[in-house]
Image (cartoon, rainbow, N blue to C red):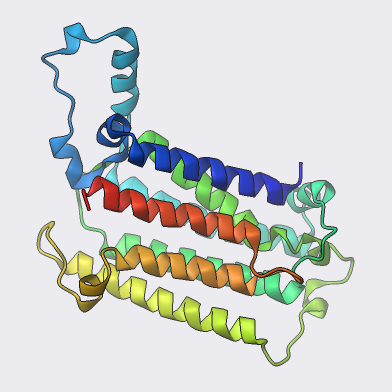
Length: 278
């Protein structure tokens, strides 16, 4: 199966799971809530004897949680994925060749320049988020359902492929990649995407720094939060839209694989709003 199609299917299915978890009250209360919201959603044990087998099994599955520091794994995986695929692409490694052999790149894909910029943007995003996780995250007893943790890890693995997969035809040419890179005046799309990426990255960092400065879990008072409920998620969506723009294949309005991935991030933000009761 075409790797780009596999990535799209993963993002669509994951988005469906997230939406289901948000919209179904029982799933939202037992699985989707995490962090400080868990304190009010722990299942009551006094009725445990009256529960059926299915309910007990669901409670057990919902009880499988990972500690707050594991959130950092998402961005470690993201950076590792960027490094891995940079090596695979430049050396035409086995993993790259495997994807190339299954790719249906017959519709006019990305150029080498686009693939490089999309990869670079994703690498910068992963490095910055990893840095913020290590330097801004405070010690916490917060936990998250293990299924969401696995889904997050898988998301960044698929994103590491999605940023360049629609340019695999150009990347798989026999010439060295450095010879295929073109150093010329950037296009309008590249300029727009670059400005959006910088704007989104700066805004998200400001939001994360402000949230880390709060003495306790309370409503933030930074101006960004006065106009947007979750400006840090809005900024992240802007970042992924920027990558989708810079990675737009010829003849398309936007990179569809990246657009599917950014849609999953948008629904992650929706999950935050719903579990917060907003």
